[in-house]
Image (cartoon, rainbow, N blue to C red; front, side):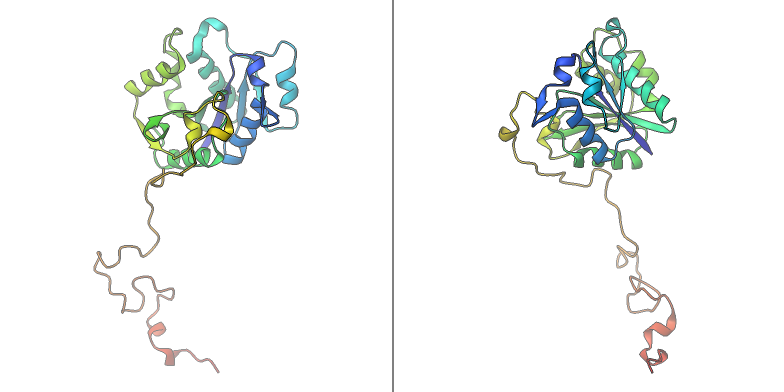
Length: 240
């Protein structure tokens, strides 16, 4: 699975606003990349080249936005198309408004892992039960995204998609998914981490052997590392 990040800024000023000593989009690119997103696409107006300059030396792909009349859904679709042009194997995109500056890289990683076990589902990260951003949208739903009316605002775009495609809310314990740049970093609630694995529970080899009726005392069954009868008999191993 290849999951891209699509970072969307409505203005160049917002894209380069100082965020803990970095231009906002540069910080977001670094977070997305360290969380495992590939490629990372930034869409923003850039009349004076300040946004492109802020991304020099990063892993970002910079793109010009769709026409304004395309609306938020059109910008999201434009970002997904650029990601596909960069990496044809892209299976989903993280739709990421640039104002959501405090998302942690662990949340990016968790959404990507959850996509790996639930490839057709729109995944909406949540904090304390409230869904936020970035939202993982499988490429399979790109056609539906293109069909959303241009007057829909970003939360409404996601709600419309979720009404027509499989979706689920994934608790992340990351306040950054709902608190945007208007909340100072120092005022963020503490990061808790997800209460459950976002990709679901996985079991190591040998888990649940008692329930399966496997006899741990029988060599070659249960968690034993040596699945051979002679492993039960120390005399069968010549240590001299």
